[in-house]
Image (cartoon, each protein chain N blue to C red):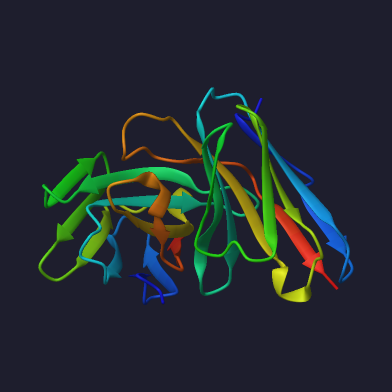
Length: 114
Length: 112
C-alpha cells in the first residue's frame, strides 16, 4: 500500500465550483504539504502544516484553503475554482524535528478547471 | 521570482555515459539542497541531498556537487541507465523545510 495517497487522481470541473482534494498518509509524519506543479515552473508550495493545530500559508495560497483533520489527513479546497488553477497537485509529508528532512510525495491529482 | 533555476528543460545521453544535470540558485540563505526524481503518473521521490558545509555527496551512481560561491549545484549520474529516464527536480531549503523551493525540472532521456 502507498504511504501517501491522494484522491481523486483526476478531476475535471467547471469555473466557480468548489473542489476538495484529499491526502492521507500512513507514515506517521507530523508535517504535511500541498504543492502545485505547472509546466516550466516546477513545484510551488500552497500550504503546509507542522501539526494538527499549525497551518501556514506557502508561496501561492491565494484562492486555496486547507484543513488538517488529523495527523494523517490534510485536505486542500478550492472555494471557487478558476481555469488558472488547472495544474497537477501534490501532497507531501516529512517527519518533524530535524530541519532538513526529505519529503515524501503522493502520486498527484490532475485538476482541470474548464 | 524563481529562486531555483534549471535552465535545461531536457537532456539526452547514451546508456553507459555520464549524465550531468545543472541547477542554479539565487538565495544565499539556502543551505540544504536536494534532488528528486519523477516518473510519469507518480510523485517525486527523493534521490540525494547535500548541505552547504559540504561540496560533494555521493550515493552509488549518483553524485551531487555544490559550488556555493557560484550558487550552483550539479547531479552526476555514472553510468547512466535507461531506467534513469525521468524528470529531475532540484530543490533548495533554508533553515526550515517549509521554505523549500523547486526548480522547473530537467527531463533526462537515457538511450539504450
